[in-house]
Image (tube, rainbow, N blue to C red; front, side):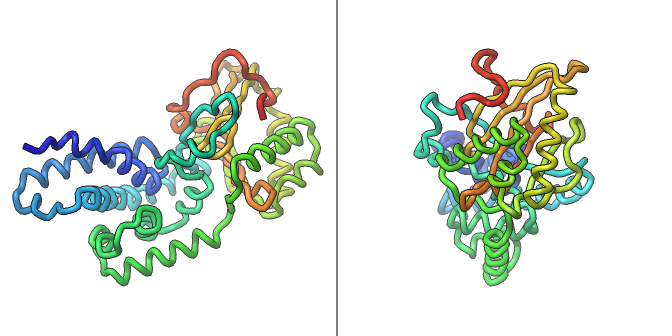
Length: 316
């Protein structure tokens, strides 16, 4: 007798990776994977449906794609009413003492840069499903067409349009971890010293900044665009922080496989604060700054240790 749970569990991490890339939320991805399990169990209980499962991973991948498509379509309505800017839920892990291990980070198949997720958010649900399934996970177009309820040619066109949007859309993120670390260090040195010229030198001319406060904490109401606007906002933000915060601690972390900073503190009114800042880096400049401070989206992030953290972030 087939052990359904064992067969499915062997594919769970893969399915979570697929769903997270589609949805930008680990919680929603896990819900989609659980719904996939329920559909899998139902299919195996039906001899006709079971006979159609010739390639288990392929069947599960397209099934989770269908589920994510429904979630994305409904998410459009929810995100129109979202307070302020929307950023994906970050996947945060501690860096080893010797710094980030590129091989280890690259091996984490469920992680994809915040910068790419921001670009994917601009696609239609159908384009996003087609792109993720084909370009990331090499699902054949006939299976994608089945998941989307369309023709193979239409599925090809959706993926092609998405591919162009990803290639052309800012912000770019192509730097390795060593370059990311160097530029983030220069970024914080400039911000901490209030050096406008140094900050402009590290930001790309078309740099963007997006902050997601989830309605709980203040963040820019729109994406900031251009090095000058981003620099002014950042310098003002860090200058004002001391007026509202009793304590601030920070540490370098891995954010979706890239180099980022986790910040924690306590507001003077007693509210705890936790933020995760991720970056996009290309051609020797920071092209994107993504400040996730929504309590709902940082709830799963492991707190910083009480010792060894301070502001400015050590260990850069």
